[in-house]
Image 1: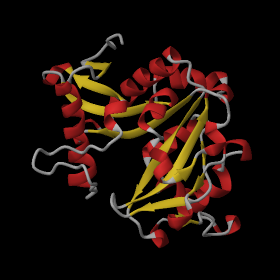
Image 2 (image 1 turned 90 degrees about the vertical axis):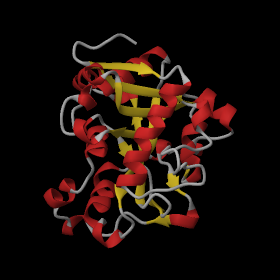
Image 3 (image 1 turned 90 degrees about the horizontal axis):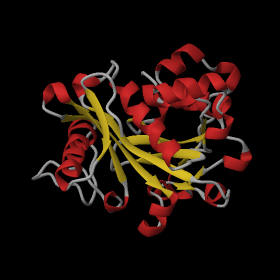
Image 4 (image 1 turned 120 degrees about the horizontal axis):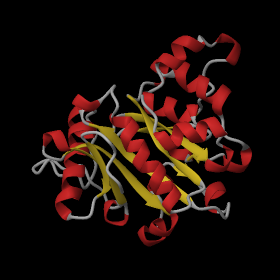
Length: 255
C-alpha cells in the first residue's frame, strides 16, 4: 500500500516481527488497559493473540517519526481465509448464517486499536484509508465484526444499547443474532424514554464511525466476560453507501 502524505505509513504485516509488534500493541490496549484475557494471551512476552491470527491479514499504521513504531492495527479476515481457519472469529458470539449465505464477498474486522498517544487525532483517518484500499483491492461487499463497550454491567449500558437497537438495527436479510448462551436484549429502555444525546455520548467512537457510514447492528448484545466487554455485531453493506459516505470512507474517518 502507498505511503500517505504524513509521518504515518499504512501496510500489511509481512514479517513475524511486524505481527509480534501488532500483538504487543493489542496487549497494551486489550489486556493492560481493558483487563482482557484469553487462552493464548502471552503475559510473559506481552502479546495478545489467538488461534485466528495465523489466518488473518494484519493492517498496520506505522509512525515514521518514531522509527516506524506501530501506532495502530486492524485485523482482517476475508471469507476465503475464514474457510482455512474453520470459521470467523465473530461466530464465537454471533450467528452469521445470514451473511455467509448471502453469496457476497465478506470481510471481518477485528482487534482494531490505536496506541494511547494517537487517539483523538488523525491516526484513525490514515488507518481507514488503508482499510478502504484493502476493501477495494479484494472487492469486498459486506464488512462486519464485533465492536465493544467496556464493561459487562448492562444497567450502565442500557441507554446506548437501546439507542442502537431502536435506530440502527440491521435489515432482516443481514441481521446477525447473538448466540443464545450469552444473548442480551438491547431494547432495555423503550424508544420514547431514551435520552438520545446521553445515549450517543456513551457510544464508542469506532461504533459511531461505522454508523456514520450507514452501518447497522445485529440483534442482541454478547457479554464477553473474558475481555470485560459487552459486544455488538456491526454490519456495513458497501453497496448501500451514499456518494457522500463513499467519499468519507475512501478518505478515512476521524473519531
